[in-house]
Length: 308
Image (cartoon, rainbow, N blue to C red):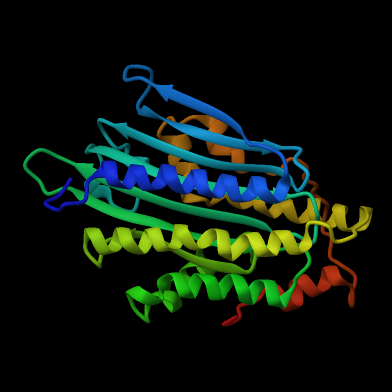
């Protein structure tokens, strides 16, 4: 890596521990256990090599479908399509590792959540390595609850506070801008924080910031999940949940940088697409009836707001 006491092995150790802690916290709420799928791709079987651990929960008591994945992959030459934002890195040897999760609860009153923390480094002989951290978390409710959203955003702000007062406003806006469906002219959810290509604090402090984001996830989301897992609901709520999940699919397949990088670099498709919800619906030119809780999602929550 670079001249520092921190090594890529340190980052990997942290990420594996984070995955295990998050899985344990979700299992405690759900009551069912995640399936563990360990996978390995040796050199010579495609443009990337490496492996990972996909932890999957389907048809749980609380989580209808969820995945918490760890991956550690590398390649001898970064493809130009994957280096679109940094064309000078095309052709460099690279290494990437991270934990990424998406949880789709069964109950429509419990929001979908996404979290990701990752590390990337690209190397070339005779040149300094180029490295960065990325990540964040964001919340996608189907029926809005202001106290939930404020709690989630407060947790995000608390994660960044030790590293500078400017980070939360920047990363919140970055999240709002990133998780936006341009073709729909609407946000995917109520946001959170997002950052990428982050290196400005130096290697060790940038890593510490990323860790703080990962460590805060359990406190940010598990209380919301526990609060709503037993809320009564009917077919109307399930139908609207399935409709709104369609926006999630559209974003992930059209815009999401991690999904596109994984597919373009020859990554493991099952692990990349474990974020997809299990039941989804689309309708032609549908809008909710004025004055309904479904309409309130659009008017009160899917709008730019300062939540904390």
